[in-house]
Image 1 (spheres, rainbow, N blue to C red):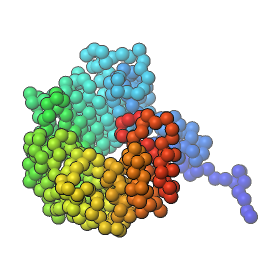
Image 2: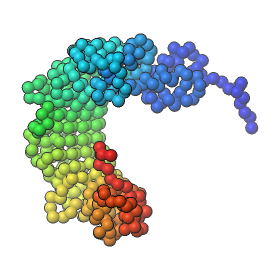
Image 3: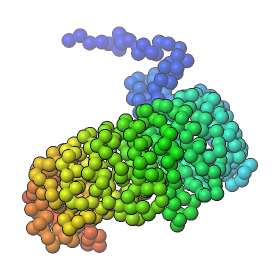
Length: 466
């Protein structure tokens, strides 16, 4: 067998060019993991890419420490390597604080930090993502947004998390003049006496014809007052032909207006509505009730969370016709058992169901009217004990099941065994809750109580808990 000696090996063709050409080629590689993979191919590329490219693709900058910004300004070639930058003010930044630049305690210090940021942005010609926690009003007014618009032509993703005392600066700022964004996420605090950001949003969206992801969260400046933000003007006029993902939080609208928006955007694949309602807080119907079989033909993922009143989902479930529906999360609603069963039967492509804190609108328990084989692709199911056992009766190919109550399994083991045996061939993981103070191994006890089921028992942890 022929072999190639080290002296016969040819160098990587890219390395034959001057270093400036190599760096220009590497500029086309945005993803940090791909930069790392390239750096590991040979020693020469490792020296070229680490740390100047690899360590500067994704940055987090704190106004409490300007060293990083000053380094970028001093070495423009490093600034050119930045693709994603998150800006925060001290308490929200995980980087180590440095007493040499404690600038966030005064308006003068903030202005100094913002001017440094502007200088750095002016060198970031390859920036594609910007995230900013706006905890304080900007002292340089629109200089930052003007610099980004002129110097960062590749910017495609914008995340702005605004707070009460910054609302005016966002609503009236030149942020709206940014162009060709593809992903926009805005978390805005609002107060009745402040300018509405609707005009700002309309202008921004009009400048972004290729936008595919839009996430809008509106939070009242006084949390104890339950107020929703009216987005009807956006729903009436916005036209986003490539929109695929839409997330709305704290929004209200007339259902017919929202339906018209959805009708103009059949490209939507992922829809999330959190604490949204019909015009005013407390209307049980919500804003997502007037739909027909033509609404959202490409819907893939649906998440609906409602806090407070418990709206009836039956109108949505009866009208829905989403042949591509893959995952559904529902929290805080009620539904009729037969209507929910009919909805699931009409959507056999569903693989994931999360049905937490929902109620049956009639005397029949939920998920009890599903014939065997009606959910041929369901692999993960998350609900409470009774619903989790009920879904097993239809014998879907479930791999992950939750959330069973450990006390009830202990005292109602026969019913649990009968249900779990119907899904035992595919079941891999079972989540349980309860018996928190037990000194013995609850999972081991459950294995003994439910013989024949080899799935692993794991304690359920709600999101955000440890």
